[in-house]
Length: 153
Image (cartoon, rainbow, N blue to C red):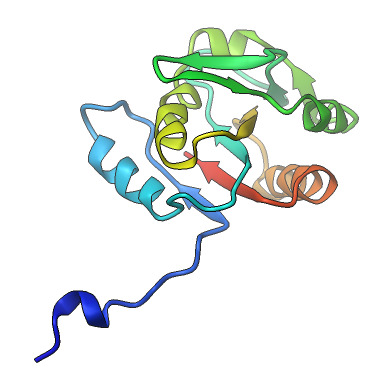
């Protein structure tokens, strides 16, 4: 009988992940398993989609921050993609959504651990039609990025 590891399939690097954001002590192991699927791939840009828990939104919100800071270091935001998305009528800059929330920030250390250097497009979505969010994701990936992965919560 062959050793189990010799018959396990090799999976391609996913283009998107849906990962929980409830904090490290609750579903951290599940999130870590999801992020291990991208391993040390050539992904250099990440679209982070997350909900706003505290601030009601009428639009899709972006942060004006130049970087996000974690205990593992700084991760730059992609200003070119932020500027490109701000051309869309359903997208606005709103730093208040990130000040009181954690849905995006909790993902970044996992990404730092598996990817090393990369930049992010942090996007807060809520009460938007799924097709609108899908359109925004297509615009930012098509216009700005080649080696990209989309992380949604």
